[in-house]
Image 1 (cartoon, rainbow, N blue to C red):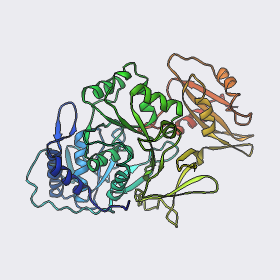
Image 2 (image 1 turned 120 degrees about the horizontal axis):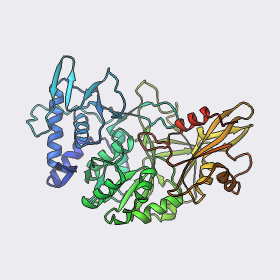
Image 3 (image 1 turned 30 degrees about the vertical axis):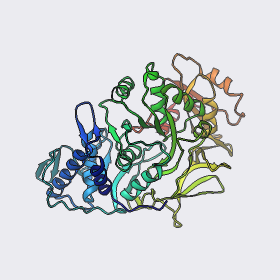
Length: 465
């Protein structure tokens, strides 16, 4: 497959022309057909132009998970504006224009009307490869970075997923992942390209999501493992009958957890691998065996080129790869390769396996220890639901492994008991010096394990020797 330079507007126009009366975007109170959503997005685009927004302007959207946020995003894509998706729970840079229901520009204030208005004079100024969105990395392993992405990146990622993601015309995808995260934006764009509906629940509380999946005939779900596991652990999980396919990624998921999710929710999981700097690197196929889907992150997308370095690091070239960072820095090396920071390998059948983070190598007395191996060993214990291993500074050893574990509901274990059980799977040098049992691992706003917070916990703990 060759990369496409088509714009989101073109895909939306085609969708509205073919199936304008189909339900496209809805929540508990309002429902937009494809045609109405398209017309309102055009109306918003014209209003933004009237207010002075032009191609290349950076406009911060308080990325609340609502239909209005999605329509604003589409509108900016139509006119070439750059949507800066900010976590709604964080402060927004004062230097960037703010869009909510009102648009504040200097001393003037424009109220945005979310209805179908005259769009004569609308100038479609977008360019496929120009920056159209800025997102911020999750910061789960370090400082957040502002990543510049284009419609070219998003659309080609969607196109490469179409035939392996199990999409159908009658699909309804429930938007639970944050809109300011690459996973959420990819869903919003793919819905237009793949021509399926989006349901936006007012709450992501597990019981409520289960209710919504049943009530609104949800057939698809994109999410991180922690989200799926919470749904699978719900006492009403098996009441969900319509869920067919779900993309899962953003964090490690053991084979046991993968199978549990499929069994409890009756869903076919499709593993995906990507990051803020490259929306899609690899993807499973819904027709693959569960053995291949639960044990890998799928095969490399057809438009991508992959290289494994001698140290095991995964390098990628892709049309889904960001042009750069907002500060002007490149995401790629001089030869055009994006260094993912992940370690992995390709098996004989072409499936990609991610074995850990390059940064997650713990150097203890000169010995390299894999945090991923420690985490896998911990997850192999029947009473552990989640695990995160990190390096803590030590005067004698340089670094020592420490781990925080989430116990399954109803389980109780001491640090000593866990360490004793772990000796069956790890060598002495690999054994964590500390293990902290807890009910839940700390997560970032995008649902990833917050290893920076865990490192801080252990560095501040006086119990580390």
